[in-house]
Image (cartoon, rainbow, N blue to C red; front, side):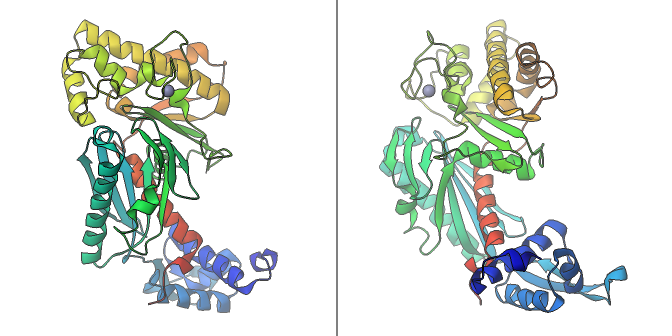
Length: 406
Ligand SMILES: [Zn+2]
């Protein structure tokens, strides 16, 4: 029995059991107290008490009679509620800020992206803008009767998760930036976490993307920068300092171009959107080096429009081959079943995926490379904000006492 394996601390046991029941309803859908008791191994009395508390916290509601078959008399079915509990994910990227909010049951409440030149604006103005987006989202949710229970901010950089400080975000020009601390005024009393954008997007892919549920999955996103996240055995691979998955800055060409991070020949200099735009439309520069930014959708539309012109097709093909070379390394390192292409890689999937898959199979170790499929994400830009909201939901499912009794 779960209860007997837990530490003697009563509050801790209670918290674990509240989480067990709430997660059970979240993952398996509505069912009666009697069914929950049988399926979780908790006693009926304990389940009744736990459900009472979850109802008081606004996380569970009764939805009507359910016939439980052989398991006992019909009882009132319980369902995850949390319709007044909001989870907010934000994403700051080089050229946009995204906001995504759901309630506890996953109902989407906000899904938007605003063009913003975070790189050109500098740290202070960028944080002011993120604070404004946060304030607006919290206000909107509040007007709809939803209380924000947590916020996770996705940033393309290396994060000190414990302090909510961005150590370094090369493409934003941020160093030791206290993101969580700067947002507390915009959302008073709301816990704020900060995470790496690609890691959060990988979590979003794992929970709700095209390859959802694939236990061994690598996510690779092409924006101005290139980031990645690794799901291994159903868990996000974080590494000792949370920096795992920074594949955009793996060096692939020692005689190549200088990267936004200051080093030479990073994979990002071969497959990042800035690199492609520079090759395709050198007269319209883009990216960190050239100091000109616009919404990625706009730049992509220009490139898509130019498909069919031989120099453009060649530039895209070169990106496809470089993607396959990097993918072969990823397969050798992590043995994923699926590699999900996000960001602009997904938008140009028709051109990029066949070339990358062929190069992967040519270069990867026989067998493992052939059993790894490259697919395009359907979550679009802003997947990281979705993943950010997901981590807030997960935090509440792990500790329902984070939500106050009404
Ligand atoms: Zn680099």
